[in-house]
Image (tube, rainbow, N blue to C red; front, side, top):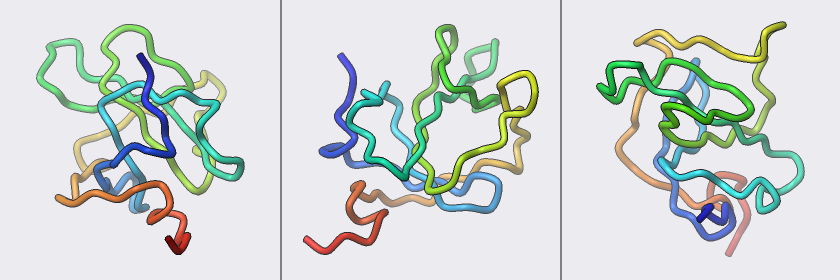
Length: 104
């Protein structure tokens, strides 16, 4: 089952210096509003829970999904390799509307 981006509570993560939303679930891309971008995160092969790569779709070692306000440059090979300094959990959550600044 895939998560509905419109109803999910996401962890806030700083990715490459920008605030993004993260969930360990696969997000149904049809629920991501236009103007936002969803990517899958792959974790390390040793299963230590270290995010190491971002792609449009990850089948093996899926760690979760990030939603961003701006598209990520996945390079000519279609992935973005992450280092330890590229990813930081901020310790709080937001809904998609809170992230977009939509008043309830």
